[in-house]
Length: 422
Ligand SMILES: *Cc1c(COP(=O)(O)O)cnc(C)c1O
Ligand SMILES: [Zn+2]
Image 1 (tube, protein in one colour):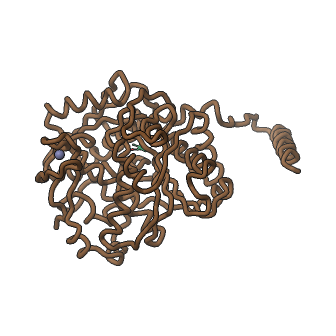
Image 2: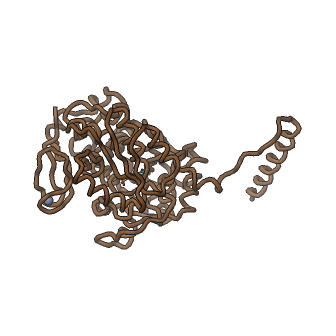
Image 3: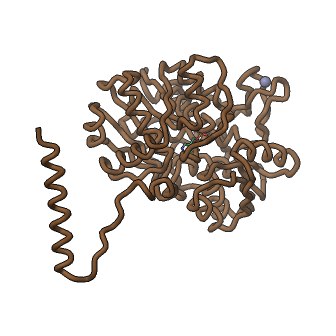
């Protein structure tokens, strides 16, 4: 049974039948999936959802495919952690981490969007899929198309981390590095999409792809006992994830799965690529594109496709946005690792550091519940940490050498403790 009427223009409301297009031919506005919410409300309930498998497809009525999913059937339902250690350091009472650093199969939230996009691509009959990526999307499209038996062409900027490249080519794809930033890659891909007849997950399949992000919010709401945190901090690249989290919360309310809520969404960016947060902080109506220069490459989009809608969601919810420097990002990664035992990538460092800053600036009330969205895994972005972390102690296989070392280590920590005493 399908709950999708078709596509609808976000700007002029013009309706289109289901097809692989993403731009309105009347006003050039972006197209969005149009659901029959009355029908969904009649067909879905908490009890029904709770009986299903633990994946994004628990919420399949709110995802835009017509038949059963065929790609990424095990994706999603990542852990929600009550982060009491980090809460104590930040001086807040109720703090949660939604941990997509362990999303299946490629360790980022992009597995959510790609399983929806490729399930839809199969329904449309595409045999070749493609994407423009900052790294994590490349990993996910490559892995999930391998398992789905689809051919793939993946386009990335030429400055990505080693793990993002190995974690793409290992699945046997066609990986094309384009000289330039993501925005150059994206521009090229828009041209290619027009002439090659492929399913481009974030271009002509974008309306379907983007809906996959909603599952991140459906899950944390269910995991919190059908409650919504009062503050949600979200990293922004194109701004799609933030926009869709806000949409998901509103949908759950609209179809009666949750009562009224008072939730603010907060956007997190790196200072070296902060078109959306700069616009929010200056109260501009539109953002100014930037040339990215930051270690947070996975969220380096200088001309964000959903930037305008992300700004609107932030404003409508009463939230705010911040950006942090590269040293602050590294501090954020370390803080999360040392307090909660979670190793996140640079984008997660951005989100943790921005949360800290929003608390310091009283943009988030420390007495309210807060959820930090961790979207990617630290093993994929090790380069900027190499000179910032402790190196191993090296000894020979000799107990005396270890005893000497042990004395040094314990004396050092006694010194550290003395420093901490009042
Ligand atoms: C892609 C990505 C984001 C943000 O994506 P949007 O384009 O804003 O939806 C956040 N974190 C990580 C790790 C990503 O790879
Ligand atoms: Zn339109």
